[in-house]
Amino acid sequence: MSLLSKDILPNHKRPLIKTAFIFNNIQLLSYFFKRELKGKYLGNITGMSWAYIQPVITLLIYWFVFGVVFKQRVHENPNIEFIVYLAIGFWPWVTFSEAVLKSIKVIEESSDLLGKVNMDFKTPVLASVSATFVINLIGYIAVLVILFLFAGEFNHKGILLLIFPIVTLYIFALSLAFIFSSIQIFIKDTNQIVGTVMTLWFFLTPILYSESILPEKYQYYIQFNPLYIPISFIHKAILTQGDLPWLGLFTLSMVFMFMLYLSIKLFNKLAKSFVDFK
View 1 (tube, rainbow, N blue to C red):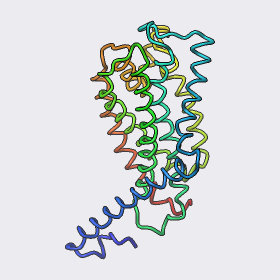
View 2 (cartoon, helix red, strand yellow; view 1 turned 90 degrees about the vertical axis):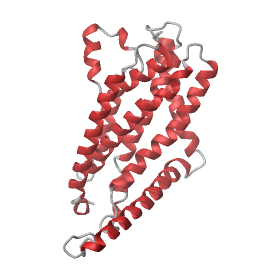
View 3 (tube, one colour; view 1 turned 180 degrees about the vertical axis):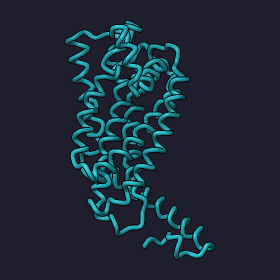
View 4 (cartoon, helix red, strand yellow; view 1 turned 120 degrees about the vertical axis):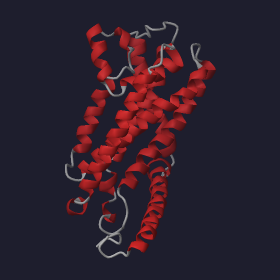
């Protein structure tokens, strides 16, 4: 029986128990956050560097195929080098994608704690998403500094505005993480399914191309992609300098906040059965 059971706790002790529970989860959040960094990034010689080398290699491959072989250009502003346009949108995508994919098996990997530790199992999911964003955003800052120094067309004043789409992506990633990590306990191939969807999602998002090259009807449909507005905002703030979609980003953020609320409700409901399926 839980220590927080209302049936056995006197009224005057419940706030103290809840405070202790919250404090305990803050400590656990710190523990899981550090474990994510050490286990996946700092646990070996190449771990930390590979977190940045792999996206750079992938970026260069896409640039060679689409920029060099297929001569892809940025039609909104022909003066922008394609690799610059690609890098600006690619890194936020990598951050979002990795945050979701790496969080899916977090609860499953913590199955040894199920039923043994009085903790909120949203904590390791939150730690996983947060650690991935922190690590990748450090790399993104380095990319922005390099582009600022060497790229011709670059609006350095728009860098601070990137915090808004990045926070939006974080909320969305956290929502999906809660959903998929809880489902993974019951449906073991969730990780593979989401990975396949992520690959398709990448090509449906205007990162390797600008939406202006699409036929008009597809330009309309692509706006239903939840990542369209954040990525478009990033491109416009830094490079193409069109009208920023503030209203769209605000509306999308509110939708993602509501989605986060629902995902937490779903997680809490499914968490009651985690022990039975560990």
